[in-house]
Image 1: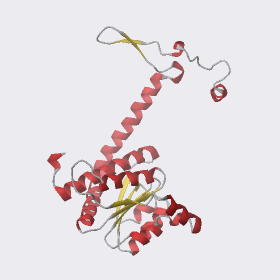
Image 2: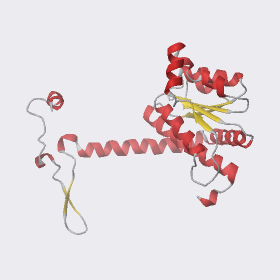
Image 3: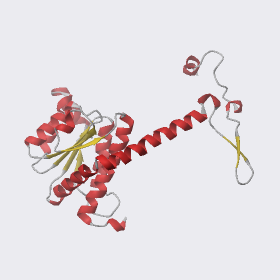
Length: 239
């Protein structure tokens, strides 16, 4: 309440009662009156416009991605499938929301996506807090992924680095280590930045909006899972 009183001007704070509700009534097919639960002071109409704008931006971006990223996504899926087929593994990493995406995508491969198939070896390097804090404390946060790559990576493995900005130093250092080991590097990033230019395959979302890029990244992650399953198990029709 104190925060709300500070936020709204004196005398302008909304009443919590029904008087604040949008009184524009809409009749349903049964003739009963239905009212919006969005208070007037929130600007229900403008919020609806914001929702439509955000969803349209995401939809338009995905259509653009289909044109500009399709070939690179196929190349990435084929590289991942080849690694799994030859007994190699997938290592994923990123910071913040990209760390969460790394874990999400790893879980889809390790468990299952849309079809019943064997588990596929995918590991997110973002989950062990003891390792992450030990490396950060004893060395530097910039090395939290490169040291894990050095310990776990082998020639022919896949390293997927995720970065919305395209300039995450710890992701870039991990790519450099992966290349020394003979791993295949795949960048899930945006246009510009150093990471895409330092990867074997760059999946660069054509946007400058951080939220839209992040939404697109997990979409690409799901597509990679789907295509990899299709390449390895040929059960497209059994979804």
